[in-house]
Image (tube, rainbow, N blue to C red; front, top):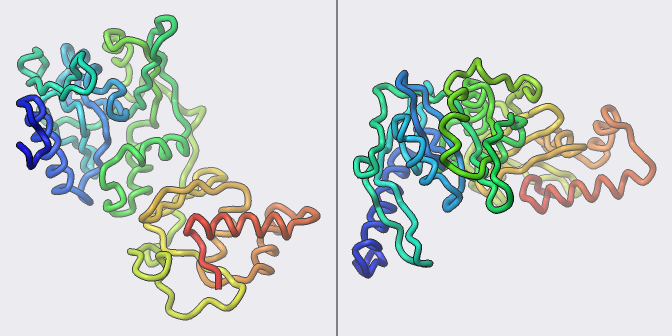
Amino acid sequence: MKHLGADTFEGLAEAVTSEVTLAAILERAGELTMLHACGVADPDGAVIALVAKSGTGKTTASSQLAQSFGYITDETVAIRADGTVLPYPKPLSVKQVMPGAAKLQVGPDELGLHVAPDNPRIAAIALLDRVAGGDHQLPVIEPVPLVEAVLALIPDTSSQAAVFQPLQSLCRLIDSVGGVFRVSYSEAVDLTDSLAPLFVAESVNPAEVAVAWTPALVERDAGPAVHQAGKKNAEPIPAGWLQRTDAVDAVEIGEDLLVLTEAELTRLSGIGPIIWQSARRPVSMQTLASRIEAVHGLPDGYEALLDEAVDGLVGRGLLLRG
């Protein structure tokens, strides 16, 4: 028990559950997209993944929804590349009233939850947003723009950077389910009826926020970071010139560029995408200015603005300066 940091049975049970979950995640890293989410399925196997951070309502939502739908998990929705879902019906980790007490591990059978149907498949992804306090709010379901959806989902995935083309694969997944939605609500008891339309993709239309995306890396651009600041430089960068560091993946969404490195996901807008795209090979500040001018024009005093933008990208580890 000391090894797991638990001095009560409840603490030991919580620690064991966490260790088993972590081991399962590490075992499938790079193979599955794993959303930090609760999941439930309708009788036909359509799964809704409700993404939320720890302590913000996933388990409560699971225990309520799985009274009517099949219980997939209260922790990690694991999705194969073909959209099929691997159920992980672990004991639900239920908070106790006493602050700081270990969570109780309660089996789904004990709570009367429905068993997941065979061959479940992802049908919808939603960001679970519980509105605490204030007036009671019935659930409101709204589409989330693609850029915001990716920025919200990446921190709530496990080992997504290890998946082949992690940003592109996530965008393909989002496309396959008709976009990501935000579900704002006050009480989990209200979710069952409100979420039913999400099981049928055609019943909710996010077309007003649909934006096409395109890959921003050719295959040979992506790779592990093994040299200074992540750049595999075959030759030194000329003095005063710039070259981008290695990225794990990158996608263009509208006028934005999302770049995933081994350290973080960065959103570039304005002149940022032009700078980053231009620096695939060593590039001078003069060439950067010319390429920016062709798209945006150059205002008076542009030199200071360009220096500031470049400094920001260098500081984020996206560019190297020679």
